[in-house]
Figure (cartoon, rainbow, N blue to C red):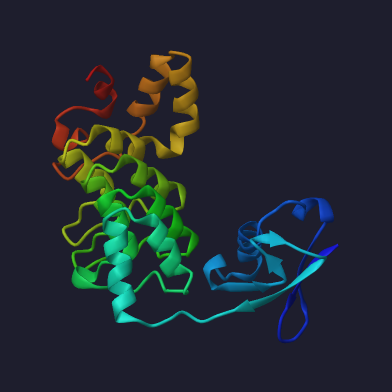
Length: 243
């Protein structure tokens, strides 16, 4: 068996069959351990490694505290805003906490969502960034991504479990702002997320009637701030198929 031990106490953390770890990287091991111990791979330090490959039949594990640095916090935000995901990874490896807040109450995940930096979002999610942190205006990262028409960012955040119902200070939700901004693809993704497997199969087989049926069952989830199920678009979601 391949064993992972705490470096200080020598107690067992995890064990893997030899075939599970053969040829695997230290990054793979850290990701597996993150699921068991609750600490991200960025906080883990493994000993008995060589050029990123696992050696022998065991490693020792340490977990380190987050570094506190105003300068690094600002650099992380700037790297997320400008798509420099390699710098983001390097800073998270310090390790640097991902949920500090700067101007307007934005976290690094707010910044990456606003910019649509998918690779940065993925790294921050792996660093266990708070999906539903709200800024001074009540906007979550998902809300900003929907407002900015960042479709891939919306997909990543919703798939990670972001709360689609969390509203901003003005009462609008991510779906509301997507509809108000006429970001149709984002609005459809948010509207149909829970039905996505069914819709995907129906679309791949050209079954428009099935898609229409799902849409007709969604008025309660669509934007209703205008006082009717048609919302700001002035049409029922099922009519979007003809757009």
